[in-house]
Length: 97
Image (tube, rainbow, N blue to C red; front, side, top):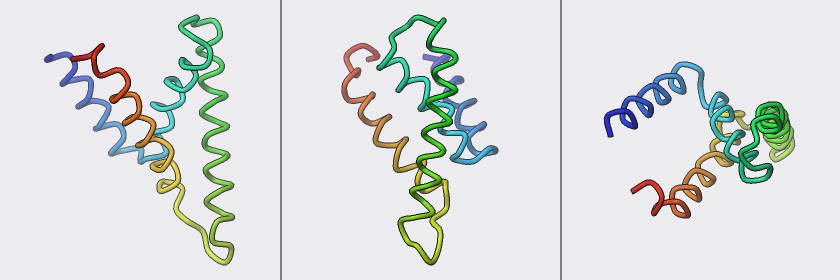
């Protein structure tokens, strides 16, 4: 329990300094693991590619939703990341608790 507490504290500290765009670095490996599996030969490079695609998609969507103005990119990454982590918590609750 202490290890999980300190891990989440460290992750929250990093996100608070780097912003929500760094949140993609936490979401992309989980999405890739759902698609590819646990083979790290494919997971590591595809996680970077997935993160780049997610950020590019969020940026493009943030620029084109309200055409005369732009939404902040952090709002779009939050719309991607928060529901995904809630989904992970709901589906894997029995494995963690």
